[in-house]
Image (cartoon, rainbow, N blue to C red; front, side, top):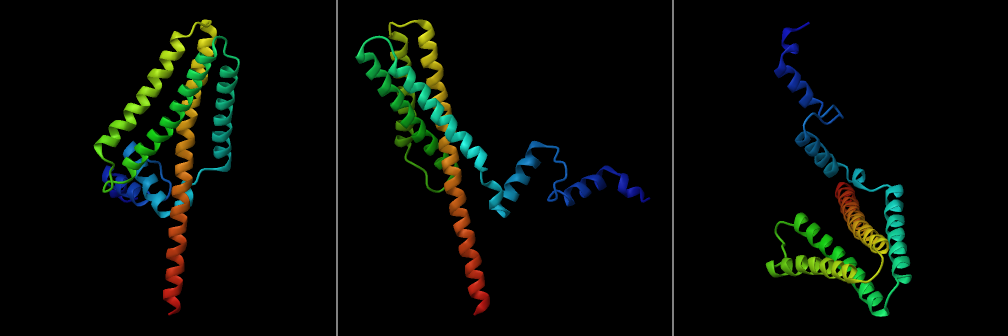
Length: 193
């Protein structure tokens, strides 16, 4: 056996040679680089599974249902119910907008939104949360009912962010797939000519 194969440098070189073949990746940076390299080479690996998409949509539907039930049977005045419905919708839409804004900022270095738009997005999200929380806090209902509304509201926001990410991932995958198909067709047409 060669003495050079047992040295630490030889081990690192062998591990580097096999990094593209599912060798154990010890550092977080190495794993991240491996995933990003392979995602660029094999876009089909980045597509969410049908089970994941179903779980995301089912969770979002359950959250909407729980919020709807809580608001439909909300004791108190109709004005309180209307305020909470508006607050939930305000939070829902600002969560989608914030999710899109953050993803757009992360995806594009050259095309950034204006600083004022960034301010509007974050202030709208904070205002939606603050106003809905204030409306929930000031309502004269039992604490157990407030807790139910709070948990269902936070569940709705969480599933909204997850749904927004899943939809954006699916859209980006379809774009990548279309580009790859066009590239393959272009190569085939070029090779025929």
